[in-house]
Length: 139
Image 1 (tube, one colour):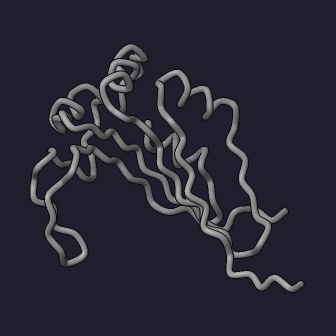
Image 2 (tube, one colour; image 1 turned 120 degrees about the vertical axis):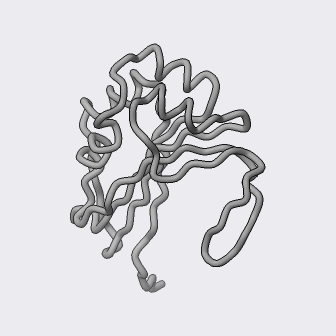
C-alpha cells in the first residue's frame, strides 16, 4: 500500500452557545477562525448567518500525509489540563477534522497509539473525510 498523498487537519470546537474568547482562554491558543452563532460570515464571496458558533485551529497541508505531526501541531500551545478538555467536550463538539487525499486507488496512513491517546484523553473525536483518487473500474 502506498503512503497517503496529502492530509489536512483542523481542531474544531463547535456549539450553539460557544464564546470564542472563552475557548481561547481555556485552551491557551487563539483560533485561526472563530464565530458566534448568528454572526454574519463572509466566505467564498458569499455572506451567510452562522448556524452555530465555532473556534477552529488549522495546520498546513502535509504531502505526504502526516496526521501524527499535524495533530501534534494542533495541540501545541494548548492546555495540558485534561479536565478543561473534558469540560469542553461535555459542552461542545470537539474534534480533529482530517481531509485525506489519495492520488492512487490504494493509499493509507497510520495514526500512532500516542496520538490516539492524546485525542482520547481530551475527549476529542477524530473525524476523517477520505477523498478517493480518480479510478477507472473495469468489469
